[in-house]
Length: 70
Image (cartoon, rainbow, N blue to C red; front, side, top):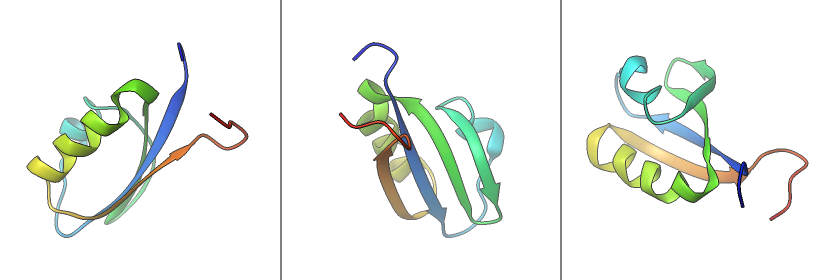
Protein backbone atom coordinates (compact mmCIF):
# COMPACT_ATOMS: atom_id res chain seq x y z
CA UNK A 1 0.00 0.00 0.00
CA UNK A 2 2.97 2.26 -0.55
CA UNK A 3 1.88 5.76 -1.53
CA UNK A 4 -1.80 5.10 -0.87
CA UNK A 5 -3.58 8.05 0.74
CA UNK A 6 -6.78 8.56 2.69
CA UNK A 7 -8.85 11.68 3.26
CA UNK A 8 -10.04 12.60 6.72
CA UNK A 9 -12.90 15.10 6.90
CA UNK A 10 -13.07 16.67 10.33
CA UNK A 11 -15.80 18.86 11.76
CA UNK A 12 -14.61 20.69 14.84
CA UNK A 13 -16.63 21.94 17.76
CA UNK A 14 -14.58 25.02 18.51
CA UNK A 15 -11.29 26.47 17.33
CA UNK A 16 -8.54 24.32 15.87
CA UNK A 17 -4.87 25.20 15.29
CA UNK A 18 -3.95 24.75 11.61
CA UNK A 19 -0.23 24.52 12.39
CA UNK A 20 -0.80 21.50 14.66
CA UNK A 21 -3.18 19.75 12.24
CA UNK A 22 -0.81 20.28 9.29
CA UNK A 23 1.84 18.25 11.17
CA UNK A 24 -0.52 15.26 11.04
CA UNK A 25 -1.35 15.50 7.33
CA UNK A 26 -1.85 17.79 4.37
CA UNK A 27 -4.77 20.19 4.80
CA UNK A 28 -6.51 20.17 1.40
CA UNK A 29 -9.60 22.24 2.22
CA UNK A 30 -10.80 24.22 5.14
CA UNK A 31 -13.72 26.46 5.88
CA UNK A 32 -14.29 27.52 9.45
CA UNK A 33 -15.16 24.46 11.47
CA UNK A 34 -14.62 21.80 8.76
CA UNK A 35 -11.38 20.68 7.08
CA UNK A 36 -10.19 17.94 4.74
CA UNK A 37 -6.79 16.40 5.52
CA UNK A 38 -4.87 13.95 3.32
CA UNK A 39 -2.76 11.33 5.12
CA UNK A 40 -0.88 8.12 4.32
CA UNK A 41 -3.37 5.23 4.44
CA UNK A 42 -1.40 3.26 7.02
CA UNK A 43 -1.50 6.25 9.41
CA UNK A 44 -5.18 7.18 8.99
CA UNK A 45 -6.46 5.49 12.15
CA UNK A 46 -3.53 6.79 14.21
CA UNK A 47 -4.16 10.34 12.98
CA UNK A 48 -7.90 9.99 13.71
CA UNK A 49 -7.10 8.89 17.27
CA UNK A 50 -4.74 11.83 17.78
CA UNK A 51 -7.38 14.23 16.46
CA UNK A 52 -10.11 12.87 18.77
CA UNK A 53 -7.85 12.91 21.81
CA UNK A 54 -6.28 16.36 21.32
CA UNK A 55 -8.81 18.55 19.49
CA UNK A 56 -12.50 19.47 19.81
CA UNK A 57 -13.70 17.01 17.13
CA UNK A 58 -17.44 16.88 16.54
CA UNK A 59 -17.38 14.45 13.61
CA UNK A 60 -14.74 12.63 11.57
CA UNK A 61 -14.95 10.56 8.37
CA UNK A 62 -12.10 8.61 6.73
CA UNK A 63 -12.45 7.87 3.00
CA UNK A 64 -10.38 6.81 0.01
CA UNK A 65 -9.19 9.51 -2.32
CA UNK A 66 -11.67 10.10 -5.16
CA UNK A 67 -11.15 7.47 -7.87
CA UNK A 68 -9.15 5.09 -5.64
CA UNK A 69 -10.58 1.80 -4.42
CA UNK A 70 -8.64 -0.28 -1.87
